[in-house]
Image 1 (cartoon, helix red, strand yellow):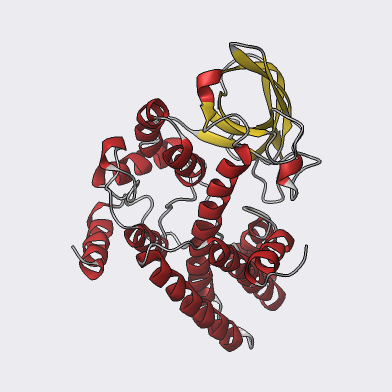
Image 2 (tube, rainbow, N blue to C red; image 1 turned 180 degrees about the vertical axis):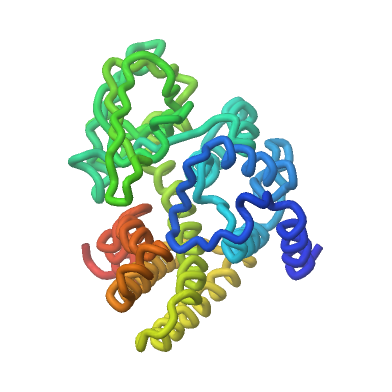
Amino acid sequence: MNEEEYRLKLREWIRNSAPESLKGRKILFETVEFDDYNELRSWQRKLADAGYLGITWPKEYGGQGLDPIYEVIAYEEFIRAGLPYGRSLGSIGLMVVAPAILKHGNEDQKRRYLPRILRAEDIWCQGFSEPQAGSDLASVTTRAEDKGDYFLVNGQKIWSSYAHIADYMILLARTGEDKYKGLTMFILNMKQEGIRVSPINQLTGKSDFNTVYFNNVKVPKNNVIGNVGDGWKVAMTVLNHERFMLGVTMLFTSKIALESLKGVKEKEELEDEVEGLEAFYRRILIKLRKGEDIDVEGSMLKLLASELLQRIYEIAVMNYDLETIMKEKWYLGMLASRGRTIAGGTSEILRNVVGERALKLPK
């Protein structure tokens, strides 16, 4: 099946199979946060059963074994249809954990966790950022001490989405003194003793982020992803994939939001920016088809799309009356878009990535 046939088949499936409760929702802010977790879990299982999740994964782990371009097409079409895809209940498992396990995990980890991630049978959260190590991720201080048969974890993580309902966490912790080689990536069972989750109240009124505290938490040695000391390498796999997919999501969310932005003088300029960003995105797709690395391009897409999305919401709030802002939920978009320039790497960090890796500028 070629790309156009796949796209048409997917559109037909969306028309005929998407639940009525989800159809037609205009996604005006990129983090689609529904209150009904059971509804999201059921929707993810329906997507998995239809073969529209794990599109690039090997078939032996529940995937479809297709080219990455088909996964990008799926993101485009579900976002265009106003349906949650990727950025919902199972997003950490799909966008963060699965790429790490697929590339660095052992066979037992792949067979044990990947099929359950696909169907939202396990919900995952991410233990990366810390209060003193957000932008400088390699400075994390949460420590995993080797106790022979297991590691003992103590420390704190912050901004962990869905930690309050998660079954597992992908945890970056310090196992040595070297800034980069002293990091290891773990699979952590969130239901065991010694873990305390504290929700963070957001401006939007929701509490999907959390602070997580670890007090003498035991982690079996077979829960290491890759090898001890490979944590930074695993983290880079995660972030490269996450940034590109975040960029795709925010680009098409920007298009949806821009369609609803009417009667403002800046619209023509914003449309030109979207068109230019789409052209850059199509160039990335060409590299994907060739199987080439898109490390820096993914960071650039995320950087530009997140700032464009934020600007669209700001212009809406500055131009519309209060009744329109509240009715159309532009205020939620403006508040939520602030986090889009932070998630997956702040705009400042991504500018450093582009400067150092693409332009070869000094640190």
